[in-house]
Amino acid sequence: MHNKKNFKFSRRAFVSGTCAIGLSVGSGVSAQTISGTTEIEADISPVVRRNISSFRSLEWRPYFKNLRKGAILVDITSRALHMWTEKENYSLYPTSVPMTDDLIKFGRTSVVKKVVGPTWSPTPEMKKRNPEWPDFVPAGPDNPLGTHALYLGWRYYRIHGTHDTRKIGRRSSNGCIGLYNEQIAEVFKKSVVGTQVLVI
Image (cartoon, rainbow, N blue to C red):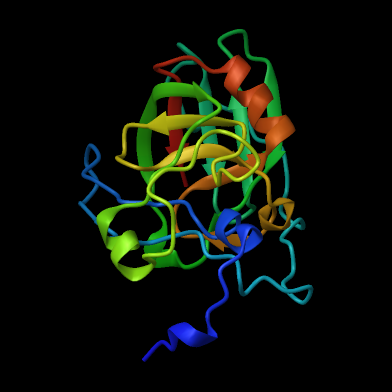
C-alpha cells in the first residue's frame, strides 16, 4: 500500500510525471484503454541507456502510398520520428517512447488537431490516485505537453514537446511520443491536419 506521507509533491515531479494516455480503436487495430496512466519519470537514472545505435534515415515508399498532406513515421525500436512533407523534404528527430511494449499503440492514424501552448487536465482516475494534482495546467513551463502538441486520431494519444529533456531517447512514457520543444516546433510547422502518422 502506498504511504502518502512518504510522497513529496513538487513542481518538477509533477511536470515530469503527467501525460495521460487512453487508447481507442484505430482502423484494423484492436482497442486498448489505459485508465489513469501518466508519463512518470521518477525512475529515470543515468544508467538508463539511450538507443542511438539504430538511429538511421528511411525511405518513405515502403510505408506510405503517397505523401499527400505529408507523413510521419515513429519507429519505436530506434526511438525516432521520421517526417516527410508533400515535397519529399525529409527530417529525422530523436524521441521518447513508451516504457513497455503493452503501452505502445502500433498502426496508422493522422493528425486531427494542432495546438500551440497546449493545456493539460488529469483524467478522473488520475485525480483519484493523485488528489494533490491540479485539475488544470495552463500552457507554460509547468505543462507536461511542452510548447506544441499534435493530437492524433487515437484518443489522448499525442506527439508533443517536453520541458524535461531527460525523456528524449528513452523508453520513458506511457504512450505519448515526445520531442525536444525546439524540434516539435519544426514538426508542428511542417505538419497539417490530416498528416499521415504510422507507428511501427
